Each structure stands twice: as structure tokens, then as C-alpha cells.
Image (cartoon, rainbow, N blue to C red; front, side, top):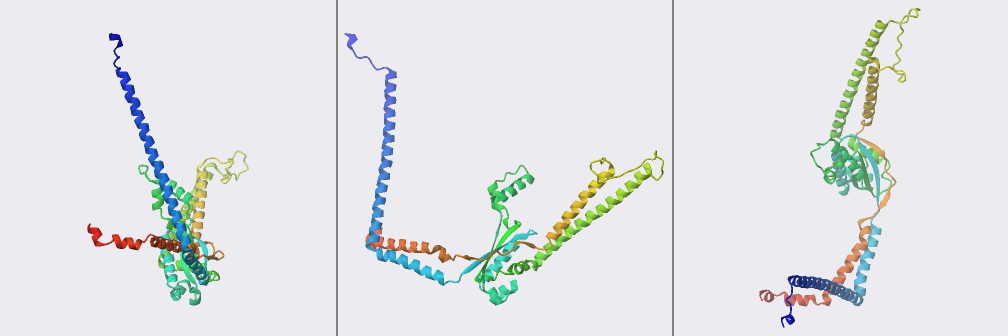
Length: 367
């Protein structure tokens, strides 16, 4: 009789049953979660579709007022753009020989302020132009010609000389790098006349050439270069004297081939012939002289380059017509009017004023 009694479940069967029940609950919760997300997305699309239909219905009912207002604004701005005087732009590319970028930018900014204020007399005096010519100039701009690759090269050069314990990211270096002192800069001039740019580059650069601070910087730099040239020339002169003395000593030591005796030693110094040269003291002196002469030539070239504050790399390019702010944004302005009119009639359709009157009272606030 005891054989017919039910056997109790083992602990292993209970654990497996609980595990499957837990897994079933997890998948059930995941399914419910995704179902809610799907329901929310469908509801969102439904509401969006209803909203779009509502907007289309508002436009249909008030088509002439909404679309007509936007069209009138666009046409009005189009005629206004045609009526405004044309503005022309031309650029020059300059190379600054000294680290005076901040002052150059400040001077261009000052010229731009004078042009914006339409003070043709002051602008004419600065640029050596007549008032009738200066009145045509309406603005100035200046910007650097450094691209991402150039800044990256500057970053690598900087990291090679900086303390290795410092960790500076390229982004930090880029944000703090002074682009105003970059050698190549572009200056843009905006004018009402495309003919004003003829000869303007020389007059514009003269503004900087006559600046007292720029003149002082140039004289200081050129004086330093001239001192270096003088020092190298003195070194070259001393080297040549040393070479002459050394050769005289060698001649006295080895003797000269004035005699016809074949046993007399002949001294042949061919310093420029690198093929058969011997690594002697006189050749070392000769090599040093060549290096000194090369340095003097480089310094003379630098002195010639820095004769001016700014070098003109490219004169004013052919003037091009610049689109006005109205020309660039008339579509945007028309779209803004369209949306504003649509919003106005949507608010009117839902009786927003009545809702404000009903729920915007003090009594409703104190309930």
C-alpha cells in the first residue's frame, strides 16, 4: 500500500520549476515593455498625422491669407533687394614680416568702423582718397589663411620643443593658437563701385607703413639683422686672416718650389676641390668660411624681405557682386511669415482666447 503514495518532489525539480517561471516572467515583462513602446510610437504617428491634417485643413480654409501674406513678403523683399545698391568685394593676400598681427587686425577693424559710419572724409584721409572715392567703400574684413593641416604642423613643431612632461591636446592648442600672427592673411574690401580697387592696395598698405609702431618694430628688427650681418662679416674677416697666416706658416715649414731642384717640396693648396681634399686645418677653415658666407647671404635676403612691414602677395582680384542679407534670407523671411500666419489661425481655430479667458482668471488660480 505504501507503494501507491505520491513521491515528494526533489529539490532539483523545484529549482528548475522556479527558474523556468522566472524566465517566463522576464520574457513576459520584456514583451509588455516592447508592446508599450510600439503602442506609443503608433500613437505618436497617429497624433502627428492628425496634426498634419489639421494644418492642411487650416491652410485650405485660409489659403489666400496665409500663402498670400508669405508671397507678398517674398515679392516685397525681392523688389527691395533690386532697389538696394550693389556691393562688390575684392581681396588682397598679404604676408606680414613681423609679429604685428593683432595691430593689423585692429587697424582693419578701425577702417571698417569708419566705413560703416560713412565718414568719407576720415576714410579718405586714412587711405589718401578723395571723399567721392572713399564714400564708395562700405566695409573691410581680414582673416587668416591657416587651414587645419597648417595648424597641425604648428602643433607638432610646438610639441617637439615643449617640456615632455606637459600634455597639451591639439584642440587646446588650436583654441589658443594666435592665428592673427600667421604670416599669410587676406584682406577683403567691400565697395559700391567695382572701379575703386584699382591702385587701392598700395594705399592700403601705406596705412601700415606710416604707422609709428610698425616703423619702430621694423627698425628694431632690421637693426638686429644688420648687427648679425656685421658680426658674421667680422668672423669671416678674422677667418680669412687666420687662413692666410696658416698658409704662410705651411709655406715656411714646407718651403716653396722656387728652385728647380726636384727634391724640393711643393705645397699645392686646392681648397675648393672637394674631390681630392685632405681633412686639414686649412680645409676646416675654408668650410667654416662657406657656412659664414651662406649665413650672410640668408641674412641679406631676410633684410631685403623685411624692408616693408607687409608684402603684397596677390593684388586685388576682379570684383564680384556680393549677395545682400535680404537676397540670402528672403525665402526664410517668407517662410517665417507663412508659419506665423498658420500658427495664428491654428490658435484661432482652437479658440485659444476663450481658453485663456476661462482658465486664466484669478479664481481658477486660487481653486
